[in-house]
Length: 171
Image (tube, rainbow, N blue to C red; front, side, top):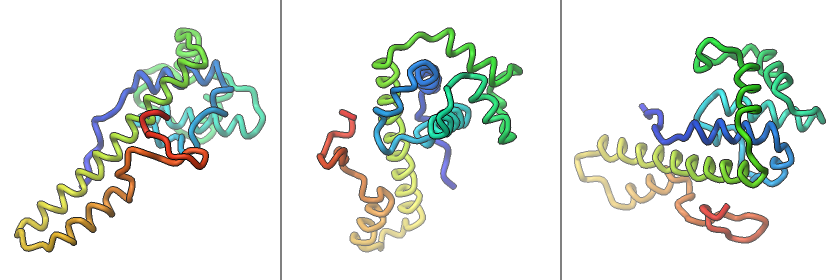
């Protein structure tokens, strides 16, 4: 059984959505691999998906539209503590003032945190494997092959952006 990661930053997730509600142009500057999976919170990941969908549909981004799109999917969120999604989105849009650069900075932070969660999941998978094979008679190449598979060849500090290698933490 894989445990849920404790590596998250819900405040940064909230701020990124608030920033996107105000600075939609930032979406064009996001890394290609940025998706709702970057968010650890289902609430903010779903909001991001709805914002992306609205952009693709050529719609003006606003809290009402995003809340309606999500509501039409029949999705609700326990973490709203009795309030509505629309109230929450209106509150964060009006209560959090971010520039485009600040929005991008929060999004970059989420990319780094997501990378750490991926590494944690792979490490947990490797730990479970080693505990399962604890007779210590496992050939070293099996351990290496399993480790490579768990990290899916993504153990590098670099990624390919626009044909060039870029340090992941510089994205």
